[in-house]
Length: 406
Image 1 (spheres, one colour):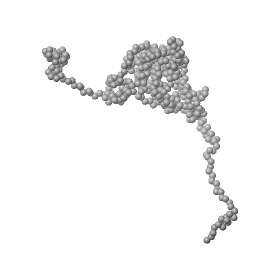
Image 2: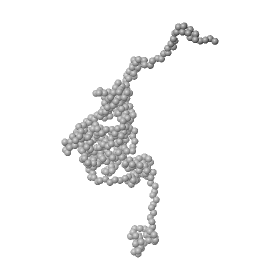
Image 3: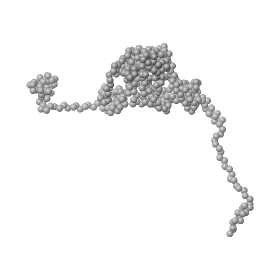
Image 4: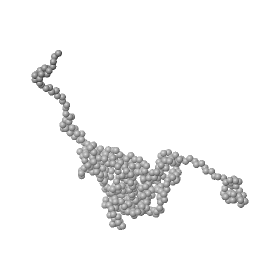
């Protein structure tokens, strides 16, 4: 290009003015017989270099960039989040997604709810499925989640109550998938829908409207779909927990963090937008009674086990089967229709709730039983005198005749 300017008879100064290059640069290129080859600058070492292999490894778990950034900061990384984000954008596989129209809701109008499966967990020596309940408010994107061991209607209602308590209120309507815990038979008109009877009592008690999303239209509940995936990738996958209660306690800490940072869609902080939600108040509404019941075998040492902890039962019921009712933070043990024990549900794992009255009199009964029991030390070995056969003297005389004397 500079050679073309030179052929036109332009001066070095004029070429520099028209091209914007420095006069010395123009002069250098104009005099060169061979076009100069640009040299690549040696790349400077990056603060991220020691962590790149770890980042690529963690991306195999489909984790978020913010999650990985937190982890490498704990490992000693002192750089900015943008460096991590830019690197992950380059190395993470990309896939195209069809464009959809995002429906935005007004403050206090709607929340979305869904379950997700999170593998299996061992509780009380049994392998059980682990689920996660998720609720997100449509306007603010404030999120609530908790892990459960069941997805029945009782558990679903209790999760709603926990979410309402977390938000200190609830919206006008909640959007659901077509799950059997919500609806038995869907109809075109909402008034003709056959709802799950237990859940119908619940939503009528609080006066919110249940909405069912249209089948085969996942974008109608995109907010909760994104939340479900985010909880898995940013919190659950690749983490370790020491108990079921530890899992949910750490989840609450994580929720506080994500609700206080800028949301990727609204570009605002959910906890700040939440101030405008204007949810329905829980004041003046009596708590909806939710009682969950399970069956447990009482051990020989007079305990039942629930969620990794043990609770005492009066000793006279050892070996029998008991009904265990869980309401709120209380655990009630029944034999038939008789209430034989009440405990506060313990947090953590491998803990014991022991009511000393359940064992009062046990030691004295054991002592009485041992005293009344016949001596069972086993038979006594006795030695008897040897049996000696008595014979007449004539027999011995015959024996003596057979011997000769030399």
